Image (cartoon, rainbow, N blue to C red; front, side):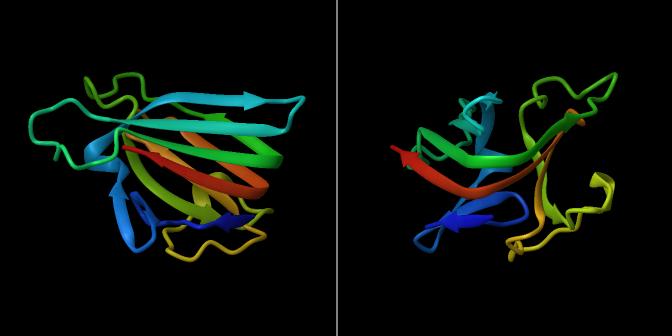
Amino acid sequence: MQFHGFEFGHIEVEIQHRAFDLHNFYQASTINYDIVDRSAVLIFTRRTEAWVPTEEARKITISFHEVDYFSSSGRDDYPIDGDDSVIHSIGAVESNAETRAFYLTDNIQPDHHLVMCFESGLTLRIQAAEARCKIDF
């Protein structure tokens, strides 16, 4: 997967040397996968708690194009209240490995799959030709 103008960290996206902390300051509001178009879109919105800095972006949209692999799995029976849509970790896994074998890295190899785990236990696994990130203030 080719990342255009951004990188993933363990819990953030980094654009132009600025990290946006998806774990502490954002929550997933939308996860869409279009089978026909072979695209996936994840939208994160700024959390509304008073401790979230107002200078954080209002919305972060991550789009995946020419998706070759998309899966979602798991969800805890008793998730922590309010944390269902909060990122726990972002990593990668080799294409032929099981999702649970993912590892944390700041340098996702083009042939590896992206793995995004949420506090609720929901896990997304994505491989696409390219990914883009848009920041809205």
